[in-house]
Length: 274
Length: 332
Image (cartoon, rainbow over all chains, first blue to last red; front, side, top):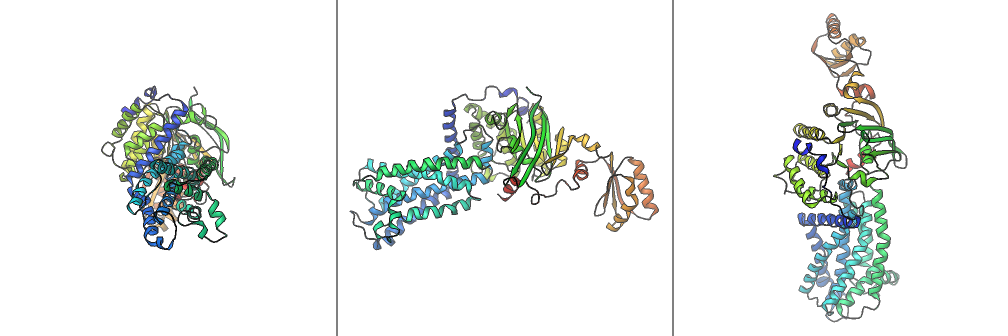
């Protein structure tokens, strides 16, 4: 021990890497994101759960409810369903942001990070970025599952990628809101529970599973105009190879609007919790 | 450069919109290159003080500097000079020991090559080489604590904050950590340590302050604190509690401080040492009270605390007192 200790003060020279603040901020975000992704590999149950749940939804709607949900598009309900499931899955994935941050907070890790000379926003940004990374992986798996159960996107490959980017961007922006929830929650279990009242109306009162025209009249204005329906319409149109109208632009506007509001909100909350 | 590594001036910190006063105007000066103790029971405000000095929490009023930098105005300069480790051993359970140190090194903005060699070096010194590539989840409490301390040392901070570093550890792990801390100080590190173990403060700290309910109730060297109390503790063990109750009446006036009775043991701080012991024996013998044991010893910091506060240092006081931090963490 004494060998490490005795050179302590003198050995401090020259151990810091001099870089610009921006370069360090990027490095800090990546360090945090890498740490979160490593944890994901270490506790595969979390990853498996976030894959199994959407697969269950695919099977449930594809084989149990599809007969009861009439849609008239080429390829049938599975082609209607899968773009919706893809949107739902990325949004559910953003729930992980709330859980992960709540865990870090209550394990005291955020305290440690706050006493380090790292970029302040890196804890939040690292989390949202790693959740984005996980969503990319989950999306690839769900696409494969969709193809297995008969999903046939009629748009070209590039359109498919655009569609994925639109929903990934929206989920990323939304995850800043879940970051706020995670920091406000008393426990990580509570964080998960608190996200459901937000996520349920957004995903189910939307065009993800059924056409909005089949919903009761009072619900339709909400369902039609809320962001998840816009994102779903954009994703579905691109994957089907039909014109998305202005839904792509509306989706992007929602995403930018969401992060413009939720980003500062989460950052302010992060500054307050300690 | 100031002679003091840490200076705190009238730090006040309230929680719950002023309803809970965790610190009520605490000032302290930590000299460079030694271990400075912050001694007090749970809820006395120790952790709140460390969190303020390590820039995690801002003071409600008052100011503090660490290595000459104001903790509120220049937090990043402070963060580059401090290491923080504590009883909650905040290491990432999902990473390996090595990955934890690498992450902390990178977040300290150290050179990559340096972080690699430093992490290896620390793991080796702290006896964690074999466990370096194992998930921290599999570590014992003592191993986590050593890794936590290692993480605080990656950037070779000149000032180290240790918040109850040995709370909850077994005696061997505690000894190991003490040895490590002594080694660090030999190397020139300044350590501010909080503890509720008086033995720990006695062994490590050159100077200390005693905190109780957010205020400093005593300060000085541990020797000074002991002499505040009287020279010797006369400890008498009786055959039964009723004998103890009778005995304490007979010898009470040998001390000008109140006697401490716990079961069959009666303790008195006395000036005269052996003469007082002989006197006590004569009186008890004359009254026919039999003794099971008698010792004379130097007063411990435990005795100091008891005489200063009227309660024992290791009393659990979290519920009635007001350290919001302690409460939150206990719950977590």
